[in-house]
Image 1 (cartoon, helix red, strand yellow):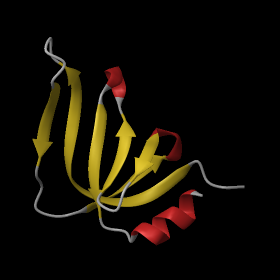
Image 2: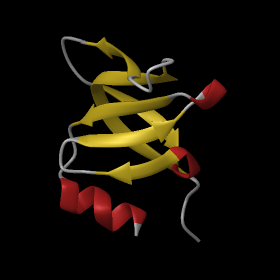
Image 3: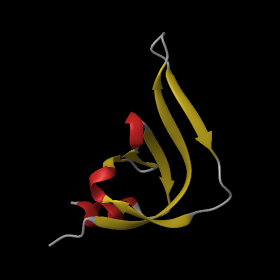
Image 4: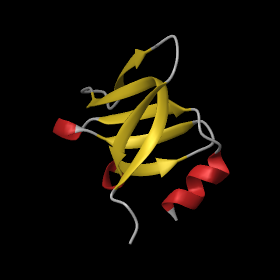
Length: 79
């Protein structure tokens, strides 16, 4: 049985807070000096690109995380 959680090494991220009245996305960029390990529920992961992992968050927000793992290795753990 696959785990419900995954350990990731995450860094800077972009938080999407939704859209304004002109349908423009409201984002907040958070820049950090390095990466740190986090345990993330796999059910929160919505997509993975070579640069970002998109996760959902409370109140309908989304977070685009930079990650340190190799894309192909991460893909093997999730598929």
